[in-house]
Every structure is written in structure tokens, then in C-alpha cells.
Image (cartoon, rainbow, N blue to C red; front, side, top):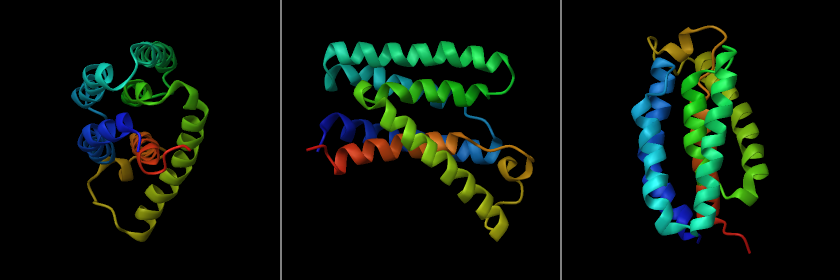
Length: 160
């Protein structure tokens, strides 16, 4: 078991579930949940990681936030998704970024299938925005699934 992943999984689980709820219900990710997610890493990270690794991960999160802000200016990427992606990226080991992106790709596809399938089957609340707005997908769902899967995999299927 990887201790840092177990602690991060335990600490981020509840805020991550709240992100899913808000993104499905309102198609927005509240700033306070993004800040809580970032604060968990910033406060717990120095106790769980080597300081150099901690700094690299935190810097990568800031880089993604800056790059995401530029993408947001184009009007094609929602700000909440950008901020949440920047908040969860520091939880990823720098030597596993490609694996994380692969998991994110798979979770993105699965998220669309599950989200659209739930509507098709009729298992959705009538007044929730994510199922009412045409052409929109709550990508926070896929971001959360990716974070939790990545951390759970590190905890329960530790590398040899």
C-alpha cells in the first residue's frame, strides 16, 4: 500500500463526491470545493511526500492553472473544470502523468456513456442541469473518477 495515496484518497473522497453532485446538478464546480481540494494537498503533502516531489507537483498544478486560464479565454473550456483539474493534478506522481492522462481519457469516454445512458434509461432527476442542457457534459464527473481511480489503484494495486 502506498501511504500517501491512501491518505489523499481518504481526504479527497468527500469533496470529490460533492464536485460530482454540483457538476451533475448545476453544471458548475464551486470554488470552495476546488480550494478544499487544493488545500488538502498543500497542507498534507509536505508530511506525505519528499519536499522536492511536493514542489514539483505543486508547480505542475500552477502551470496547468495558468495554461487552463489561457484555454478558458477561448471560451471552449469551462473555468470550473480547469480549476478542478489544476487542483487534482498535484496528487499525481510526476512519473505517472502519462498513465493519469490515459486514465482520464478512458474515464472521459466512460463518463459520457454513463451520463447519456442514464438519461436514455430514465434514471435522472428531471430538474438537474447536466441532463437538460443540450451538447453539454459535466466533465467534473470524469475528473473525479480519474482522481479516485488513480489513488485507489495506487493504494490497492501497489507497484511491484
